Image 1 (cartoon, one colour):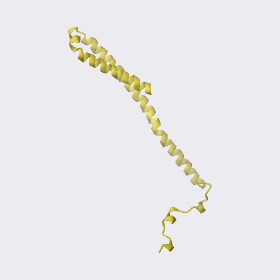
Image 2 (tube, rainbow, N blue to C red):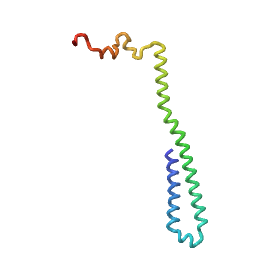
Image 3 (tube, one colour):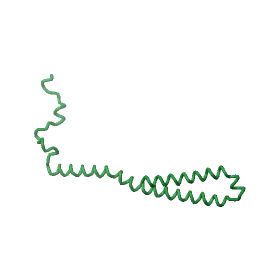
Image 4 (cartoon, helix red, strand yellow):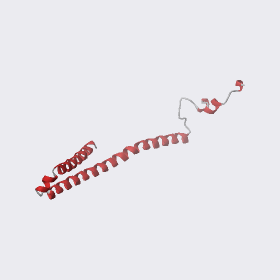
Length: 115
């Protein structure tokens, strides 16, 4: 993936270099009648840069989507496992049986001795 980005950046830099070169030497290019040749070089460089950018975007969309889906797959696995454990009637924490646990609501009720 890094190589694809590097190639794309190099091609875009080449297009920028040619633009700068053509602007700086516009009078010379016109004077020698080399406009068609320079235009062909520029179009070829721009087409190459566009192809590289599209290839990089395709690669990024493939890997980016896969990487974004991984947390969701993990969440589904945890929920599925928890659901299967709940349906089986097993305790989520085997070391503490359900009868010894106190609910959070009972801890929040004021005691009768507090009055």
